[in-house]
Figure 1 (cartoon, rainbow, N blue to C red):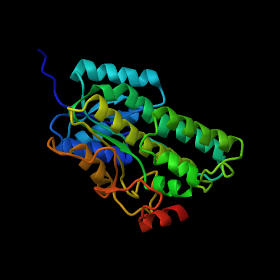
Figure 2 (tube, helix red, strand yellow):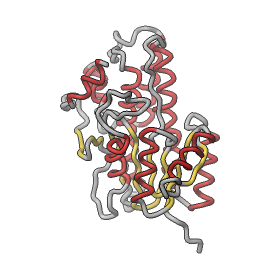
Figure 3 (cartoon, rainbow, N blue to C red):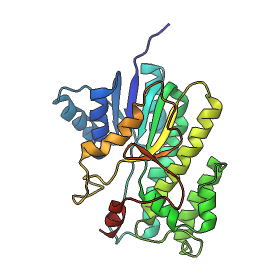
Figure 4 (cartoon, helix red, strand yellow):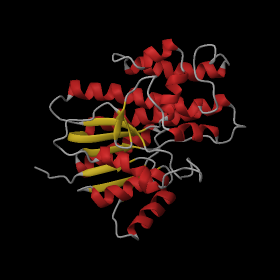
Length: 295
């Protein structure tokens, strides 16, 4: 019988928070750590940067918007490791240019942040071993998006019985309604942060659904899956005004990725600063969220 090594994998990890998560996992995780990026040159450069610190991550190409690329990664994991112990879905994009049309922003961020992450989970969640850990990077802006949705949409997004198919329908409707300039009338957020925040709202709800499915399908495997906000981090996405360093931004994702084998939870939750935040419109938002939105 083949004995495989333990393995952790981080998507979108050639820079920023993803890179810092890989760095921290290399220091703390007992097993191999795979850094993925959609650009091979940048991915290898990121690996070399960590090797210069005495760390030993592996690299694999991954474009989360390309199903063939995801399946190539899946096949690599099955061949090299026979499965997966830790999956951190970090890859994502955000537009900073207000001149970009809201529809284009919504279409591209939804394609990457929500549907790309969903496709990675579809292919890789079946590989997660018993006591495995899955972390989906989200944002506290998702709570702000929930607050700005109509009461009807809030009920749908906080329902304990919403299905993945229903969620996909809502995410597609958001993009369609923006294209048709009826999103405000239909009860969607319409502020400048709406496109990005709605993709992260989708990630939170998807995480709740995925956790529920894992509990039903693999009830004895004690796999824990959660979403989290790293905080407002000084990265290309967060900008120089942000409050946290990359290392500080990696703390909550890594905490969830390394929950001990005897941990009872959290599972299907949204975490901030290593603490569970209730997924409801009335949840209190940190002061930095309002500051971040104003900038």
